[in-house]
Figure 1 (cartoon, rainbow, N blue to C red):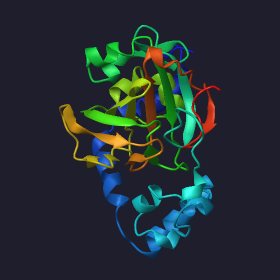
Figure 2: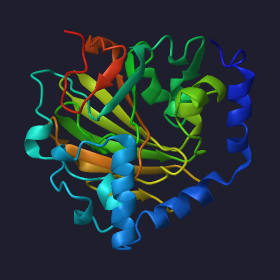
Figure 3: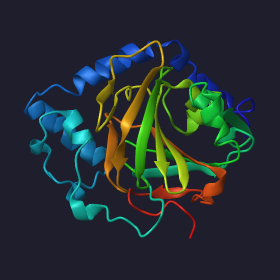
Length: 283
């Protein structure tokens, strides 16, 4: 289904997101989720656990009362044995659901059946970088509220540069992917460029409303504050990451997009739930 032919009810439901103050609301959520309100906070966490059926047996700290704020709970660490690493060259960096994957067709990535978006725009207008993935591979993984929200390196490599691209904060779900053109190239995003044994790999953290806060292990919190211009980081020496090592986190959650070059010859799995550490490639 193309975006043009999306159901009218979906278009009407999405329309308010074009006019609401997305960044201001996300700043409010950022502030609220960091309040330490004792029993009130713990009660809200317990309600969230029940509503979204969160498996706290995996958590390093399994009790709601272990978390001083909602954000501390949302970005909770897991027990070391909860996410074993598969014997695979490329693992999933997150818990989530594969929403799309496949070949990048002449620089175009699939957003939803019948609609694509441009790799150049996704990568903040960097034509030289996008050219490396002109016929490469991509995988889009959506993180739901119940998922583990830390992001890990899918492959051993070195981060040589990083780019922040400002943008909107549309929510990311099945409805918005059907109705918002070029959704992932419009929302704000953080782009990490890794050099690996299979070539250049890109990990893109895509923000969304109430998810306008992203951070990396080496730089800390990137947003907020929100920027009007692109921001760049170059690392010399580069930042070494082992496969499975924590890379960053969503303070609240959204979407991760992975890009690999054509020569990588790694066909990504096409759909289904996946957990961090599981193989992301078709065996």
